[in-house]
Image 1 (cartoon, helix red, strand yellow):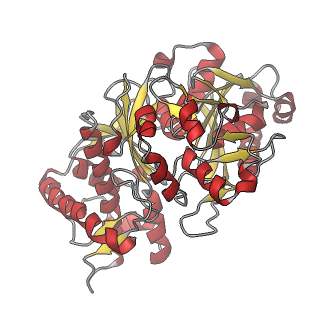
Image 2 (tube, rainbow, N blue to C red; image 1 turned 45 degrees about the horizontal axis):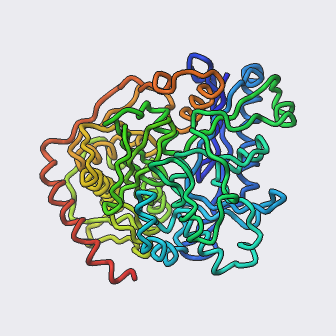
Image 3 (tube, helix red, strand yellow; image 1 turned 90 degrees about the vertical axis):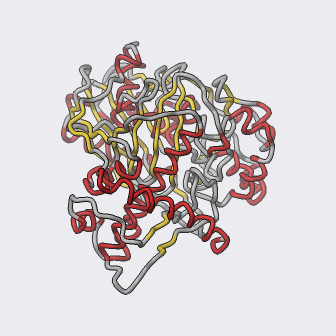
Length: 484
């Protein structure tokens, strides 16, 4: 048996698979986000451990014999978080998360240094790890002085699981400290933020062993024998491993808390000017490009809180048949935006509201706004030299048929739905655990699921959607001044 652990923003998911990659069971533990100031987003790493224990307890209760047979564990996690550890492996402050934008000034200052884009292949975004350390250095110098290790969230779980300070390429590529082409830490970029390579975890590929489960935890969970912990992956690269998105030209769109348009690449293709992320993949000698929007299902959840209806109910009210845009436009910049604007200060907006603008109309606008933001990422990928002919949909938002039709029409691309099953980050992490424990071939192991259905663009609405998208594009410059 093989265990995948996915540390997300809203919870930890644990998934068991067998040697034939059949899913045996899964369980989860919930997490909350603390927002002590506008633009801040933090979590206590102790909560990650609690949620992981909760998820493992759920698996143990349902599948004790299968859990006992685990031989490999893979880790996946939310990227970019700055988990600051002292010399005794104690956490110094709450982890600053991926969607925290407090370090926008520090990010801009680092991005103005040409070596960052040249070496990492990416803009220095406020959500990345390096500017967070620059912010801590400037605003919490007493904490900065005590930092012995900087770990990404899943790698803090690794420390708890194994006692090792280790990471892998896909997650580390999102720190602004990695030489992405050479797949190693950059001493000069670390020095630019007052850091040293000795404060970084050692690096392996996501398919390689990166520690072994501590005997104390193995005994508590009823596991006997040696258990390898794989390097693992950042959440999107792990999802790509779960979806089989590891070959040139393969792509998926993820509708989670954030939204991602992910394309696998056989070579390193940076183009930071397009605000596309160019990161290492979890598999050796493989890279990927990503357009990222900060609020996807998060935007619908925000509106559901105001409307007093669940996101599921709002989607149900729209039905399954795609409607033409109403003239109400939503810009989903609730916590700033990455692709294509790289703007931490921008905030969202409804435009075109009238007396007739009902709850259903606004829900439709929210979904369209996220679809148009993903279209922005498609245009950015095209500018970076990647051409897509179709995408596969994953994530919680992909359960909304209306939303999928909206995305297919906004992108003017077919959207594939995988056959029944869970092919997300926890499954991808379990695959990486299997590879690390058995030496299985990474590409052969990370195959794509069967396609259950393809949702085609709504031909009668493609031109209407295109006109609405162009209006959407014109609104960002108009509201930019108002938000700053």
